[in-house]
Length: 425
Image (cartoon, rainbow, N blue to C red):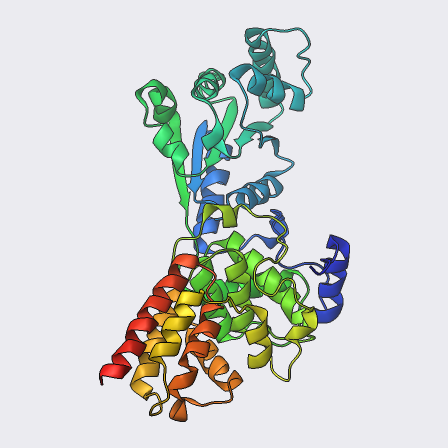
């Protein structure tokens, strides 16, 4: 296995190759990369209004990787120094532990005090801050992990108020499960206190994904020609489902491939290879485990080969190199079956290849037809005069590009039936 570059080497490689000031697709929630899409701007405006108007309880929900944490970071930068923020990302806290963490972050002594005593001290602190015109806001990330006991404890904190306004602004941020949790009858006190709820969604179109990628490249200092063409953007959209975190991971890995190949453009094939390493399938809901990844070291087919395999005259690996990357041998029984079926005979028809292309697309996505063409060329043939005797080897090569075992088996079974049908025609 090739030794992966260390993070600093990885960063320097990107900067020197593409002329960047910094990494454009990091997974840390840097507010400078906040994407000013309407759904995020609406969320920011709603939270700013809720905090400044002292609404008390607010809720933000969204699926994994949709940008909840970067929204909070942008909110904090936007309202400082008018607002004193307490940011809590460790949601595995008891009611006592959460109160202790809050008073500690505000610089209030909590040594050897009960929770009630800490709340009394917190009330005094908040009243003093109110007199100076300062607002105190508690931001709780990953709120779906809070226990029912901790959520109930937040009710005590939300009760800190004057006759006119709430003293502590509380923003719960988490996955949609937190909204479902608040539907429990035991937590109805909290649900009734929520003054606003904003829901974040993934980007909805390839155009939005394109704008998002361009935005991050611009913030990172890129001023050169287009890196991601229309086809690469479409592939990114297909495999990420528009989820910002997955877009970042896909683009980061694709840029690494381009650097290794000494290319300045990312091809859709590079996006596809990054996606297969993430176990992503086109058009399918992305696995939670993929969205939870941080710095990804490329795995899967090709990771053990020399990175120079990417060198070719084009923007992506040539057909021969690609075939060497990820051939997965067929079982011996399958090989025997193919040898019996794919005997010498007339050239394969264009209709047969149309059916093969559809089956491959179902298994691996929009890049399938291009891969099919490359593998045919790698065998020294063309679609116009492809001999039946080589169909077994072609299916083996195409199967090697399909990492999902279920989809690979489905593709092979479909092609076995198609080849068998050739004998009856």
